[in-house]
Image 1 (cartoon, each protein chain N blue to C red):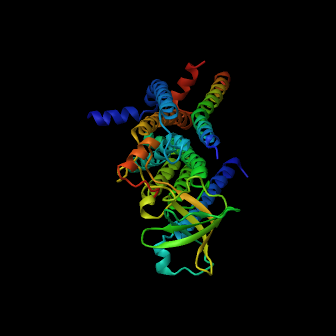
Image 2: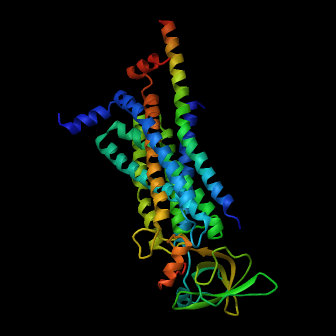
Image 3: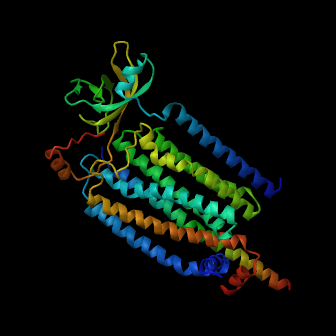
Length: 47
Length: 248
Length: 147
Protein backbone atom coordinates (compact mmCIF):
# COMPACT_ATOMS: atom_id res chain seq x y z
CA UNK A 1 0.00 0.00 0.00
CA UNK A 2 1.35 3.44 -0.88
CA UNK A 3 1.20 5.82 2.05
CA UNK A 4 1.53 9.04 0.05
CA UNK A 5 -2.24 9.62 -0.49
CA UNK A 6 -2.87 9.38 3.26
CA UNK A 7 -0.12 11.87 4.07
CA UNK A 8 -1.29 14.27 1.34
CA UNK A 9 -4.92 13.94 2.46
CA UNK A 10 -3.93 14.70 6.07
CA UNK A 11 -2.09 17.90 5.21
CA UNK A 12 -4.71 18.94 2.67
CA UNK A 13 -7.50 18.56 5.26
CA UNK A 14 -5.38 20.44 7.79
CA UNK A 15 -4.75 23.29 5.34
CA UNK A 16 -8.43 23.57 4.37
CA UNK A 17 -9.70 23.60 7.97
CA UNK A 18 -7.05 26.03 9.24
CA UNK A 19 -7.60 28.35 6.25
CA UNK A 20 -11.31 28.37 6.97
CA UNK A 21 -10.66 29.10 10.65
CA UNK A 22 -8.28 31.92 9.72
CA UNK A 23 -10.24 33.63 6.95
CA UNK A 24 -13.86 33.27 8.12
CA UNK A 25 -13.61 35.98 10.81
CA UNK A 26 -11.72 38.32 8.44
CA UNK A 27 -14.48 38.04 5.82
CA UNK A 28 -17.21 38.39 8.44
CA UNK A 29 -15.56 41.50 9.82
CA UNK A 30 -15.36 43.05 6.36
CA UNK A 31 -19.10 42.44 5.83
CA UNK A 32 -19.95 43.82 9.26
CA UNK A 33 -17.92 47.00 8.73
CA UNK A 34 -19.59 47.53 5.37
CA UNK A 35 -23.04 47.22 6.99
CA UNK A 36 -22.10 49.58 9.80
CA UNK A 37 -20.78 52.09 7.32
CA UNK A 38 -24.02 51.95 5.33
CA UNK A 39 -26.01 52.47 8.51
CA UNK A 40 -23.88 55.44 9.45
CA UNK A 41 -24.40 56.96 6.01
CA UNK A 42 -28.19 56.54 6.35
CA UNK A 43 -28.13 58.17 9.78
CA UNK A 44 -26.03 61.09 8.53
CA UNK A 45 -28.50 61.64 5.71
CA UNK A 46 -31.57 61.65 7.94
CA UNK A 47 -30.03 64.20 10.31
CA UNK B 1 -4.90 51.55 41.94
CA UNK B 2 -2.48 48.63 41.96
CA UNK B 3 -0.82 47.65 38.66
CA UNK B 4 -2.77 44.37 38.26
CA UNK B 5 -6.16 46.08 38.56
CA UNK B 6 -4.97 48.80 36.21
CA UNK B 7 -3.96 46.20 33.63
CA UNK B 8 -7.31 44.40 33.94
CA UNK B 9 -9.20 47.65 33.51
CA UNK B 10 -7.16 48.65 30.49
CA UNK B 11 -7.37 45.28 28.69
CA UNK B 12 -11.01 45.11 29.70
CA UNK B 13 -11.71 48.25 27.73
CA UNK B 14 -12.85 47.18 24.24
CA UNK B 15 -11.35 50.13 22.28
CA UNK B 16 -7.97 49.62 23.97
CA UNK B 17 -8.06 45.86 23.32
CA UNK B 18 -9.20 46.38 19.73
CA UNK B 19 -6.44 48.84 18.95
CA UNK B 20 -3.52 47.01 20.62
CA UNK B 21 -4.37 43.56 19.26
CA UNK B 22 -4.56 45.10 15.81
CA UNK B 23 -0.82 45.73 16.03
CA UNK B 24 -0.07 42.34 17.59
CA UNK B 25 -1.93 40.02 15.22
CA UNK B 26 0.33 40.42 12.11
CA UNK B 27 3.36 39.51 14.24
CA UNK B 28 1.66 36.37 15.54
CA UNK B 29 0.81 35.33 11.98
CA UNK B 30 4.39 35.94 10.88
CA UNK B 31 5.83 33.81 13.70
CA UNK B 32 3.30 31.07 12.93
CA UNK B 33 4.28 31.01 9.25
CA UNK B 34 8.03 31.00 9.93
CA UNK B 35 7.78 28.22 12.54
CA UNK B 36 5.49 26.16 10.30
CA UNK B 37 7.94 26.46 7.41
CA UNK B 38 10.83 25.35 9.63
CA UNK B 39 8.78 22.54 11.18
CA UNK B 40 7.59 21.18 7.84
CA UNK B 41 11.09 21.42 6.35
CA UNK B 42 12.56 19.47 9.27
CA UNK B 43 9.66 17.02 9.30
CA UNK B 44 9.49 16.26 5.60
CA UNK B 45 13.08 16.77 4.45
CA UNK B 46 15.35 16.18 7.43
CA UNK B 47 13.48 13.73 9.66
CA UNK B 48 14.00 10.01 8.99
CA UNK B 49 11.14 7.59 8.32
CA UNK B 50 10.01 5.38 11.18
CA UNK B 51 11.31 1.80 11.58
CA UNK B 52 7.76 0.43 11.77
CA UNK B 53 5.47 3.01 10.25
CA UNK B 54 7.58 4.25 7.35
CA UNK B 55 6.56 7.61 5.89
CA UNK B 56 3.17 7.73 7.67
CA UNK B 57 5.03 9.01 10.73
CA UNK B 58 5.04 12.41 8.97
CA UNK B 59 1.31 12.69 9.75
CA UNK B 60 2.41 12.99 13.38
CA UNK B 61 3.74 16.53 12.82
CA UNK B 62 0.19 17.74 12.18
CA UNK B 63 -1.84 15.20 14.17
CA UNK B 64 -0.13 15.48 17.55
CA UNK B 65 0.11 19.33 17.71
CA UNK B 66 -3.58 19.55 16.71
CA UNK B 67 -4.61 17.02 19.35
CA UNK B 68 -2.64 18.91 22.01
CA UNK B 69 -4.24 22.20 20.92
CA UNK B 70 -7.73 20.68 20.99
CA UNK B 71 -7.26 19.91 24.68
CA UNK B 72 -5.27 23.01 25.63
CA UNK B 73 -7.81 25.42 24.13
CA UNK B 74 -10.67 23.72 25.96
CA UNK B 75 -8.68 23.92 29.19
CA UNK B 76 -8.15 27.65 28.62
CA UNK B 77 -11.86 28.11 27.93
CA UNK B 78 -12.74 26.35 31.18
CA UNK B 79 -10.32 28.47 33.22
CA UNK B 80 -11.30 31.77 31.54
CA UNK B 81 -14.96 30.77 31.75
CA UNK B 82 -14.66 30.15 35.46
CA UNK B 83 -13.03 33.53 36.09
CA UNK B 84 -15.53 35.24 33.81
CA UNK B 85 -18.45 33.69 35.69
CA UNK B 86 -17.18 34.52 39.15
CA UNK B 87 -15.83 38.02 38.47
CA UNK B 88 -18.01 38.94 35.51
CA UNK B 89 -15.10 40.06 33.33
CA UNK B 90 -16.53 40.75 29.93
CA UNK B 91 -13.25 40.47 28.00
CA UNK B 92 -12.79 36.89 29.25
CA UNK B 93 -16.32 35.96 28.16
CA UNK B 94 -15.41 37.23 24.70
CA UNK B 95 -12.21 35.18 24.72
CA UNK B 96 -14.09 32.02 25.78
CA UNK B 97 -16.57 32.16 22.93
CA UNK B 98 -13.93 33.26 20.42
CA UNK B 99 -11.78 30.26 21.36
CA UNK B 100 -14.44 27.65 20.65
CA UNK B 101 -14.29 27.67 16.80
CA UNK B 102 -10.48 27.48 16.85
CA UNK B 103 -10.61 24.56 19.27
CA UNK B 104 -13.24 22.83 17.14
CA UNK B 105 -11.03 23.26 14.06
CA UNK B 106 -8.04 21.64 15.79
CA UNK B 107 -10.22 18.83 17.12
CA UNK B 108 -11.50 18.14 13.61
CA UNK B 109 -7.94 18.07 12.28
CA UNK B 110 -6.83 15.72 15.06
CA UNK B 111 -9.71 13.33 14.29
CA UNK B 112 -9.34 13.45 10.50
CA UNK B 113 -5.56 13.12 10.38
CA UNK B 114 -5.81 10.34 12.96
CA UNK B 115 -8.18 8.59 10.60
CA UNK B 116 -5.77 9.07 7.70
CA UNK B 117 -3.01 7.61 9.87
CA UNK B 118 -5.10 4.77 11.29
CA UNK B 119 -6.17 3.36 7.94
CA UNK B 120 -2.69 2.41 6.66
CA UNK B 121 -1.21 1.51 10.07
CA UNK B 122 -3.97 -0.01 12.19
CA UNK B 123 -6.06 -1.19 9.26
CA UNK B 124 -9.10 0.96 10.04
CA UNK B 125 -10.29 4.57 9.71
CA UNK B 126 -12.14 4.54 12.99
CA UNK B 127 -12.69 2.43 16.09
CA UNK B 128 -14.81 3.18 19.15
CA UNK B 129 -11.97 2.94 21.61
CA UNK B 130 -11.78 5.21 24.65
CA UNK B 131 -9.25 7.68 23.17
CA UNK B 132 -11.00 8.23 19.85
CA UNK B 133 -14.47 8.33 21.43
CA UNK B 134 -13.54 10.88 24.11
CA UNK B 135 -11.88 13.11 21.48
CA UNK B 136 -15.11 12.97 19.43
CA UNK B 137 -17.06 13.96 22.55
CA UNK B 138 -14.69 16.96 22.81
CA UNK B 139 -15.71 18.02 19.29
CA UNK B 140 -19.40 17.84 20.30
CA UNK B 141 -18.62 19.91 23.39
CA UNK B 142 -17.07 22.63 21.23
CA UNK B 143 -20.17 22.57 18.98
CA UNK B 144 -22.30 22.74 22.12
CA UNK B 145 -20.49 25.87 23.38
CA UNK B 146 -20.89 27.59 19.98
CA UNK B 147 -24.56 26.62 19.65
CA UNK B 148 -25.35 27.69 23.21
CA UNK B 149 -23.83 31.12 22.63
CA UNK B 150 -25.83 31.58 19.43
CA UNK B 151 -29.07 30.46 21.05
CA UNK B 152 -29.35 33.57 23.24
CA UNK B 153 -30.14 37.12 22.13
CA UNK B 154 -28.37 38.86 25.00
CA UNK B 155 -24.61 38.39 24.43
CA UNK B 156 -23.59 38.63 28.08
CA UNK B 157 -26.13 35.99 29.12
CA UNK B 158 -25.14 33.84 26.15
CA UNK B 159 -21.46 34.04 27.03
CA UNK B 160 -22.20 33.08 30.62
CA UNK B 161 -24.11 29.99 29.54
CA UNK B 162 -21.30 29.06 27.14
CA UNK B 163 -18.73 29.58 29.91
CA UNK B 164 -20.69 27.27 32.15
CA UNK B 165 -20.71 24.53 29.52
CA UNK B 166 -16.96 25.00 29.04
CA UNK B 167 -16.43 24.36 32.73
CA UNK B 168 -18.72 21.33 32.84
CA UNK B 169 -17.19 19.82 29.71
CA UNK B 170 -13.66 20.15 31.05
CA UNK B 171 -14.27 16.87 32.90
CA UNK B 172 -13.72 15.22 29.54
CA UNK B 173 -10.10 16.42 29.37
CA UNK B 174 -8.59 14.00 31.91
CA UNK B 175 -10.65 11.24 30.31
CA UNK B 176 -9.03 11.95 26.93
CA UNK B 177 -5.55 12.22 28.42
CA UNK B 178 -5.66 9.11 30.60
CA UNK B 179 -7.90 6.99 28.35
CA UNK B 180 -4.90 5.12 26.96
CA UNK B 181 -3.81 4.20 30.50
CA UNK B 182 -7.17 3.49 32.11
CA UNK B 183 -8.55 1.24 29.41
CA UNK B 184 -7.30 -1.11 26.71
CA UNK B 185 -7.29 1.00 23.57
CA UNK B 186 -6.18 0.58 19.99
CA UNK B 187 -4.51 3.99 20.28
CA UNK B 188 -1.01 3.66 21.73
CA UNK B 189 0.04 5.27 25.00
CA UNK B 190 1.85 8.56 25.46
CA UNK B 191 5.37 8.80 24.00
CA UNK B 192 6.44 11.04 26.86
CA UNK B 193 7.46 9.95 30.33
CA UNK B 194 7.27 6.21 29.60
CA UNK B 195 9.96 3.55 29.91
CA UNK B 196 10.53 3.24 26.17
CA UNK B 197 12.85 5.29 23.99
CA UNK B 198 9.92 7.55 23.04
CA UNK B 199 10.43 9.78 20.02
CA UNK B 200 13.84 10.00 18.36
CA UNK B 201 15.27 13.58 18.55
CA UNK B 202 15.27 14.03 14.77
CA UNK B 203 11.49 13.45 14.81
CA UNK B 204 10.91 15.20 18.12
CA UNK B 205 12.27 18.59 16.96
CA UNK B 206 9.87 19.09 14.03
CA UNK B 207 7.05 17.90 16.31
CA UNK B 208 7.88 20.45 19.02
CA UNK B 209 8.36 23.27 16.49
CA UNK B 210 5.00 22.52 14.87
CA UNK B 211 3.41 22.33 18.33
CA UNK B 212 4.79 25.81 19.06
CA UNK B 213 3.67 27.12 15.65
CA UNK B 214 0.02 26.17 16.20
CA UNK B 215 0.01 28.07 19.48
CA UNK B 216 0.75 31.24 17.51
CA UNK B 217 -2.03 30.28 15.09
CA UNK B 218 -4.37 30.06 18.07
CA UNK B 219 -3.18 33.42 19.37
CA UNK B 220 -3.63 35.22 16.06
CA UNK B 221 -6.94 33.54 15.24
CA UNK B 222 -8.34 34.01 18.75
CA UNK B 223 -7.57 37.74 18.80
CA UNK B 224 -9.01 38.19 15.28
CA UNK B 225 -12.21 36.49 16.38
CA UNK B 226 -12.33 38.40 19.68
CA UNK B 227 -12.11 41.71 17.78
CA UNK B 228 -14.97 40.64 15.52
CA UNK B 229 -17.07 39.64 18.54
CA UNK B 230 -16.41 43.03 20.18
CA UNK B 231 -17.47 44.86 17.00
CA UNK B 232 -20.66 42.81 16.81
CA UNK B 233 -21.59 43.26 20.46
CA UNK B 234 -20.74 46.95 20.57
CA UNK B 235 -22.01 48.02 17.15
CA UNK B 236 -24.19 50.72 18.70
CA UNK B 237 -21.46 52.03 20.97
CA UNK B 238 -19.57 55.25 20.42
CA UNK B 239 -16.10 53.68 19.86
CA UNK B 240 -17.33 51.43 17.06
CA UNK B 241 -19.10 54.34 15.36
CA UNK B 242 -15.92 56.40 15.59
CA UNK B 243 -13.97 53.48 14.17
CA UNK B 244 -16.40 53.10 11.26
CA UNK B 245 -16.27 56.77 10.33
CA UNK B 246 -12.45 56.80 10.52
CA UNK B 247 -12.16 53.95 8.00
CA UNK B 248 -12.70 54.64 4.37
CA UNK C 1 -42.44 32.58 12.93
CA UNK C 2 -40.26 35.60 13.63
CA UNK C 3 -36.58 35.31 12.68
CA UNK C 4 -35.59 35.66 16.35
CA UNK C 5 -37.81 32.79 17.44
CA UNK C 6 -36.62 30.69 14.55
CA UNK C 7 -33.04 31.28 15.53
CA UNK C 8 -33.79 30.35 19.14
CA UNK C 9 -35.58 27.20 18.01
CA UNK C 10 -32.69 26.16 15.78
CA UNK C 11 -30.20 26.89 18.55
CA UNK C 12 -32.08 24.81 21.07
CA UNK C 13 -32.50 21.97 18.57
CA UNK C 14 -28.78 21.98 17.79
CA UNK C 15 -28.03 21.74 21.51
CA UNK C 16 -30.45 18.87 21.96
CA UNK C 17 -29.05 16.99 18.98
CA UNK C 18 -25.47 17.70 20.04
CA UNK C 19 -25.94 16.62 23.63
CA UNK C 20 -27.97 13.64 22.48
CA UNK C 21 -25.29 12.51 20.06
CA UNK C 22 -22.60 13.03 22.69
CA UNK C 23 -24.48 10.96 25.25
CA UNK C 24 -25.22 8.18 22.77
CA UNK C 25 -21.55 8.04 21.87
CA UNK C 26 -20.53 8.12 25.53
CA UNK C 27 -23.02 5.39 26.45
CA UNK C 28 -21.86 3.26 23.56
CA UNK C 29 -18.32 3.62 24.79
CA UNK C 30 -19.16 3.03 28.45
CA UNK C 31 -21.29 -0.04 27.84
CA UNK C 32 -19.02 -2.29 25.89
CA UNK C 33 -16.12 -0.37 24.49
CA UNK C 34 -14.31 1.29 27.35
CA UNK C 35 -12.28 -1.88 27.47
CA UNK C 36 -11.62 -2.02 23.78
CA UNK C 37 -10.25 -5.57 23.78
CA UNK C 38 -9.86 -8.73 25.88
CA UNK C 39 -6.43 -10.19 26.55
CA UNK C 40 -5.93 -13.96 26.14
CA UNK C 41 -5.78 -14.23 29.95
CA UNK C 42 -9.16 -12.46 30.29
CA UNK C 43 -10.61 -14.90 27.79
CA UNK C 44 -9.22 -17.96 29.58
CA UNK C 45 -10.51 -16.72 32.95
CA UNK C 46 -14.01 -15.84 31.83
CA UNK C 47 -14.60 -18.68 29.33
CA UNK C 48 -16.15 -16.76 26.44
CA UNK C 49 -18.89 -18.84 24.76
CA UNK C 50 -18.48 -19.85 21.11
CA UNK C 51 -20.25 -17.48 18.76
CA UNK C 52 -20.01 -14.41 21.02
CA UNK C 53 -18.34 -11.57 19.15
CA UNK C 54 -15.35 -10.16 21.01
CA UNK C 55 -12.14 -8.26 20.38
CA UNK C 56 -9.04 -10.21 21.28
CA UNK C 57 -5.84 -8.23 21.81
CA UNK C 58 -2.26 -9.38 22.32
CA UNK C 59 1.05 -10.05 20.60
CA UNK C 60 1.52 -12.33 17.62
CA UNK C 61 3.70 -15.11 19.02
CA UNK C 62 7.08 -15.50 17.31
CA UNK C 63 7.20 -18.34 14.76
CA UNK C 64 3.45 -18.95 15.02
CA UNK C 65 2.32 -17.42 11.71
CA UNK C 66 1.49 -19.95 9.00
CA UNK C 67 -0.12 -19.02 5.70
CA UNK C 68 -2.11 -21.31 3.42
CA UNK C 69 -0.27 -21.74 0.09
CA UNK C 70 -3.25 -21.13 -2.19
CA UNK C 71 -5.43 -18.60 -0.32
CA UNK C 72 -5.31 -15.60 2.01
CA UNK C 73 -5.99 -17.83 4.99
CA UNK C 74 -3.52 -17.36 7.81
CA UNK C 75 -3.25 -18.74 11.33
CA UNK C 76 -1.24 -17.38 14.22
CA UNK C 77 -1.13 -17.43 18.01
CA UNK C 78 -2.17 -14.35 20.01
CA UNK C 79 -0.42 -14.27 23.37
CA UNK C 80 -0.03 -11.96 26.36
CA UNK C 81 2.76 -14.01 27.90
CA UNK C 82 0.46 -15.82 30.32
CA UNK C 83 -2.10 -17.31 27.92
CA UNK C 84 -2.15 -18.06 24.19
CA UNK C 85 -4.99 -18.41 21.72
CA UNK C 86 -4.90 -19.92 18.24
CA UNK C 87 -6.40 -17.47 15.78
CA UNK C 88 -7.41 -17.90 12.14
CA UNK C 89 -8.13 -15.18 9.64
CA UNK C 90 -9.07 -15.12 5.98
CA UNK C 91 -8.39 -11.70 4.50
CA UNK C 92 -5.92 -8.90 4.00
CA UNK C 93 -3.74 -8.20 7.01
CA UNK C 94 -2.61 -4.64 7.86
CA UNK C 95 0.94 -3.70 6.83
CA UNK C 96 2.15 -3.62 10.41
CA UNK C 97 1.11 -7.26 11.01
CA UNK C 98 4.19 -9.30 11.85
CA UNK C 99 5.49 -11.67 14.50
CA UNK C 100 5.96 -9.87 17.81
CA UNK C 101 3.50 -7.12 16.80
CA UNK C 102 0.50 -6.11 18.88
CA UNK C 103 -2.79 -6.98 17.16
CA UNK C 104 -6.49 -6.79 17.84
CA UNK C 105 -8.53 -9.56 16.25
CA UNK C 106 -12.29 -9.03 16.02
CA UNK C 107 -14.32 -12.22 15.74
CA UNK C 108 -15.62 -15.17 17.71
CA UNK C 109 -14.57 -18.56 19.05
CA UNK C 110 -15.46 -21.53 16.89
CA UNK C 111 -16.85 -24.76 18.35
CA UNK C 112 -13.48 -26.36 17.72
CA UNK C 113 -11.90 -23.89 20.13
CA UNK C 114 -9.85 -21.63 17.89
CA UNK C 115 -10.59 -17.93 17.43
CA UNK C 116 -12.00 -17.07 14.01
CA UNK C 117 -11.21 -13.43 13.26
CA UNK C 118 -13.35 -11.43 10.83
CA UNK C 119 -11.04 -8.42 11.04
CA UNK C 120 -7.47 -7.93 12.24
CA UNK C 121 -6.13 -4.52 13.34
CA UNK C 122 -2.49 -3.80 14.11
CA UNK C 123 -1.52 -1.93 17.27
CA UNK C 124 1.75 -0.06 17.39
CA UNK C 125 3.78 1.32 20.25
CA UNK C 126 4.56 4.90 21.28
CA UNK C 127 8.20 4.77 20.16
CA UNK C 128 9.28 6.46 16.94
CA UNK C 129 12.81 6.11 15.55
CA UNK C 130 14.70 5.57 12.31
CA UNK C 131 15.35 1.94 11.28
CA UNK C 132 19.08 2.16 12.03
CA UNK C 133 18.38 3.18 15.62
CA UNK C 134 15.85 0.37 15.98
CA UNK C 135 18.44 -2.12 14.68
CA UNK C 136 21.05 -0.80 17.07
CA UNK C 137 18.64 -1.01 19.99
CA UNK C 138 17.77 -4.56 19.07
CA UNK C 139 21.44 -5.52 18.93
CA UNK C 140 21.91 -3.93 22.34
CA UNK C 141 19.30 -6.30 23.69
CA UNK C 142 16.10 -4.26 23.78
CA UNK C 143 13.12 -6.19 22.53
CA UNK C 144 11.29 -4.29 19.82
CA UNK C 145 7.90 -5.88 20.14
CA UNK C 146 5.08 -3.69 18.97
CA UNK C 147 3.00 -3.43 22.10
